[in-house]
Length: 232
Image (tube, rainbow, N blue to C red; front, side, top):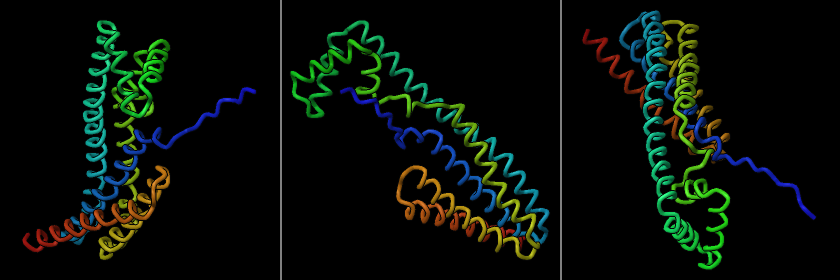
């Protein structure tokens, strides 16, 4: 009896967009709330903090998009260079590449004779895909996607930054720092928990980590803003 193929979807398939999304939203909340708190500590006008926050949103989203695109493009260039080299080696030295593939299977615990047979079968089916996966560790699920990473980071940064801006707009000037810091820490905790849940990880540690560093950033900018405000 032939059983139907069971298609599994593993969490590793989400790693590309999940990393960019969590990084973008996290950075949007922390940088914008810190900027708003710093300006609010230096000025009694909530409009100054709001303008600074909006400017930070636009600049941050563009910076995230550009940074992610350049970074992931560099990764993609390296991957492509390795793939071109591997394709060349397969065409010029197929026997050596076959022995290398068999050696990889032996190193993982496969019997040498069986490893040779497996390598031959994998090579017969798709030698390039076999070497890309087993020798270079490159698969479709984790391949670098610069445009996807850039767009995801920019969008999620803007969404994250909008939240502390909304709190700033709705809060009386004398309570901006308190409400923005409290609301942003709550948002960061929720983001950390959500990212951990989507990625299939434990919730507690990522939640504490992102909240802790967010609090450090806000406290630092509040202190600097207060010092600058008093000095000026």
